[in-house]
Length: 230
Image 1 (cartoon, rainbow, N blue to C red):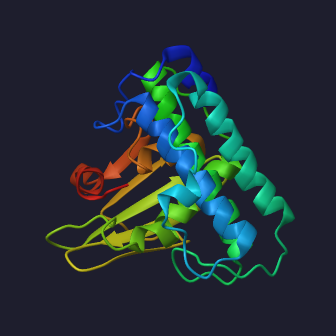
Image 2 (image 1 turned 180 degrees about the vertical axis):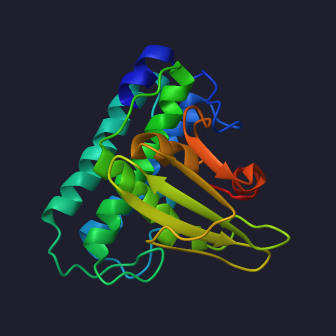
């Protein structure tokens, strides 16, 4: 992400985030790294909300944007490395091990926004299959239920997902009132399958369907993409 910001410049649009330029994308991710790093390093029971506390020097200049991003990334990695296994701090949702929770959440926050940056430059690279599968798992088992983010439909729909290269499957159910998923491929109105590295950014609404295989009702996938805030 930092490399792309330096190459393409801060004013290039980010197609997967229509209201953002590269500047906004890098600022957002650098902010999140600092926000999470502060919470982890100090074991806070509530998330920091004071902008001055998170970025005391204000936003960086355009020429300093990439370096500022790298510094924030280093901070959150250092905070996770030094945190005890039994760290107690605030998490977005209940999590038995906050250190593990934040390591995973920051990995996927950064990975998906890396795709956003790559789309701005025009060349999306892949992911390690296990990392990608874990990102699918986070989305379909946990993130899917976040209030205000969940996919919805006027009638209940079921989406099956199969990562063929790691032989892992999931089933997601979403409708007018609820959305939830499980780590098992079952009967579904529609099933999408392919390598985890392709499924991961597709399900997070970043990349097109491409060579992924779809069986069943394509309208389920369209509803997933159109109704979720991922």
